[in-house]
Length: 177
Figure (cartoon, rainbow, N blue to C red):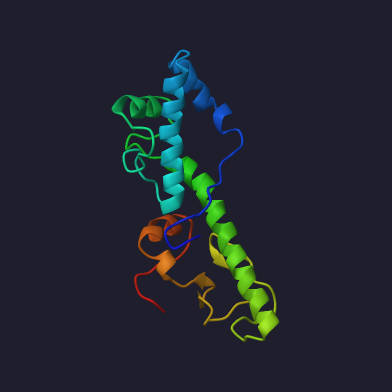
C-alpha cells in the first residue's frame, strides 16, 4: 500500500461476466456505447476507491467518461453501486480485507528478512504471521508492533485508512505508541 492507498487493484478476471454486469447489459438492450460508458463509470469508481483505500462515490471518481445521473442510476439498479453511489460495502470488504492482510504480511516478511540479513534486533527469532486481526508471534515492540500482538498506528494507518482497517480488526488509535 502506498501512503495514499493502493498502487494496484485486485480485479477478478470475470469482471465483465459478473451477473450484475450481464443485468446491466440487458438493461441497456444492445446500446453498446452506453454500456461501455456505464461500465467505465463503475470501473473508474472501483479503481479510484482502491487508489484512495476507501469507497469513493462515482462523482468523486469521475474520469474520462461522465458519471451522469442516468449511468449512476443504472449502476445502482443492478447493485454495482449502493444508494450513496459507492462500491457496495460487502463487496468492498470481501476484496480489500484480504488485500490489506496480504500486503501487511508481505511488509512484515520483508522486515523479518532484512533483520536476519543485517542483524537487526527489532524482531525476535521465529516467524511472524499477519492476519487482519494482527500479528500473531515472533515480533517485538520497536518494529511497528505493540504488546498484545496488534499493529501500532502509523501515518498509513491513521486518517483515511483508519476506518477501513478498523473494519478488518486492526486496532487503530489516534495516539502514537
